[in-house]
Image (cartoon, rainbow, N blue to C red; front, side, top):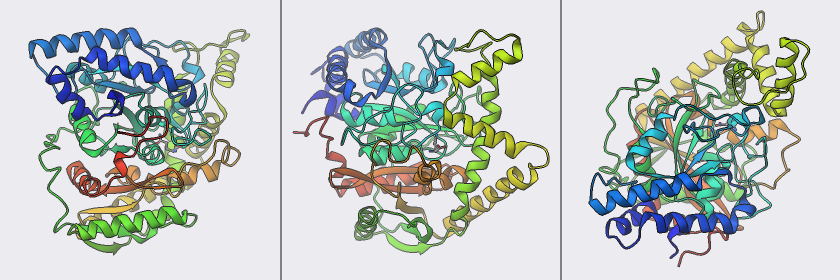
Length: 490
Ligand code: GLN
């Protein structure tokens, strides 16, 4: 097996045993980036020099057996919404072209402390707004399983990098599905932790009450490891929780025997591809065979989650994005006759169409006279969704459903129809609005395209979601499948 096809845990063992060095491993991943990067366009920026410096430092630690951590020497990709000090960070937007953050995100600092190696900044939808990566201000990303298809979004570059062997693991961000949906569409594992579990300090904000950073990996145990490294309280993010972080690996292999797993009937949505429904029903049966008891449950307000999200998220975005006016960050159009005209020109030229659509939607929903009818109403719906989950979790330990109603679709197929695009996240959005956690794990490959099973657990019960996902993974082979671009795992 090639080094770039392996898991974090495998490589960690090889590094510790001095079978390989981190420099060798990092070189192997960069060779793969050189070989297939033009096809996937997974990266916006490759940080070769930084990676090599970090790999050398990791090798020192490994040689001296000093402070060797599970991620020491492991090459990881970072979604371009995460600030890395002195490394250009654009959030996939032209308006941040040339912006060099003067500080690093907390998750970035934590990975640095672990001794991880940063490969670069991955492509994404502009300000993480999108489900296909086609809203990137730079270029779309191609799915390593079928290059004419989208990798999902908005963390499409992170997903494609892991699925193509251009990274061993990656970080993404999830506001309405942006880790789980691209993970599903590229055959990898992606987890959205509970809001507050991971610090958002240094994450370029989209919708601050929904955004969470999380791991994108080859398998569930790697996801647990990466989450372990980034979770926990951060005094620089007042919304980060001070609850202690459990040992995610300790309960990972406990199995589902005796667990109660709920299947929300609303999650088999209209428009779901039959192949997806099939795979999900098979996956549920398999978990039942593993000893879980399965029961149908109802989350009665699921159908209004999407409309509520498309008020709340754009409302928060319109406020967060007000800061991009050309005076402080990145791009400045120039040529305005006065300051107002300059602001207008900069925002007109710097933002893409989807971002403008959301700013207009959000500004409208928050404006006096409409606030009660839209924003306040959407917040009430959010409360109902929180209550739906609370009620369901009095009966069951976790919920099962598809991650995305479809497998990866063709590039361009939905770009003219925003609502069709928004419907991609119909089963992932409720977990963000409901303050719970969710993971997507590979559960099928149909016509050469991966399908993902979503496991949703209560807030701050990541260990339960991981445990169910692991039990499923351990009984199946889907996570071992490698995209044609990564090559068959020998
Ligand atoms: N696709 C959803 C949107 O466009 C979710 C994006 C995300 O999770 N960042 O808003």
